[in-house]
Image (cartoon, rainbow, N blue to C red; front, side, top):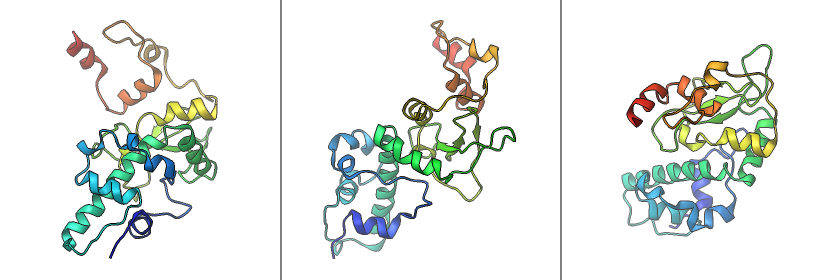
Length: 213
């Protein structure tokens, strides 16, 4: 029996309209450049990439446990490709469609209630769950308890791309003057979005400055 990406999606992925992940365009899946460096994070990356590209393969030689391991590699690889795809203009626009439909919920601020989008704090998997970011007030929130998606499937670059491509203006002054004036060890002002990540415990800016010295 042979299976490709079509059956992989049917068996292992949520393709419903309410799915948090967007469907990656085929042109992106077929490009070898899209997979660069991902073998460091995904077991059986070569075989998994063939499946995701839609290549057929014979499963008769695989044990059930090996097939399950391969399926997990495909899910992880697709998630990391998803992170890269939504940082492109095409990917951001696809995610914007879900954002407009309110798939990811709304900001809990009473004065805002703007729709949220998902993001992660790291580009590497298994570092933490996905978070929810409000593109109006620039704050970050925890997702509902039943959501267990790896934050790396969205990554930290999405807020910047989302603002740049969708041109959504800020509604609130999100940071204090003190935070906006924080500088790194080279004297450069730390971007406001990184201050928000620091606040959420991604890293300690003071320790970073000490280590740099």
